[in-house]
Image: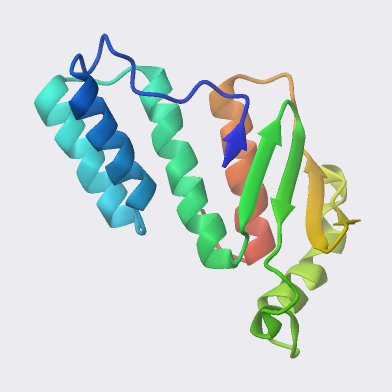
Length: 157
């Protein structure tokens, strides 16, 4: 995930550098929403209510989990510009066959006109570019991105 949204664990919330680093490592290794929910509860229990930057971090990790499960290798958000990177062409199971994830997504793309979704080829990298409203709060932008990924994958995110 790359984004211009401030997403971090401030030192005023978790004062110990070692503890913050451990939390970042745990977040990086998250593979399920259940793990993420457990860490949310743990932070609240240990340190109290967390600030919005931590909520942004949780939302981004959640999006990473959902996007990864859908097959995206990278998600980038800058302002209203979204770039979703597809896996390399060598991962034939993602692309080939009528029920392959790529084929299902391409069937959905025409219904996403308001997001201006289009494919971009950059060298060997295939990406899906889209637009979301850029003038909203970080929470609104994250909600738009989550909705877009959910619609592309045919799942509620």
